[in-house]
Length: 112
Image (tube, one colour):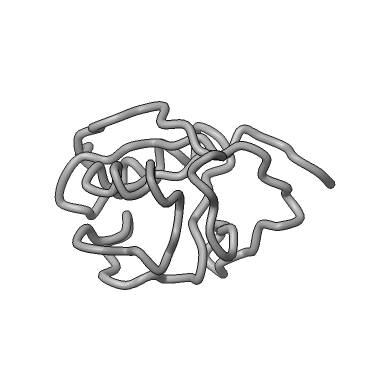
């Protein structure tokens, strides 16, 4: 299918420096829990938002205990996305920092 976009990733702002240096690497999940509150990676990859609606959803369900950042991911091929069985998709493996652009920072947790 080829690249279609834009695609995004939502992560705790605590992960900003690590993501800027190492990209999206599920093996580096550290102190901050995942957006859904998981203490360990739910998949061997990074969850991807397919547009603003999904970004807003992930920001709204934020269970990290603090603010979150939104990263744009360049060059996502729809054929590479894997259904996580939850209605959401992820990119298996890692995404290098060179394919990421920080587009929103320190978004406060929103009331549900």
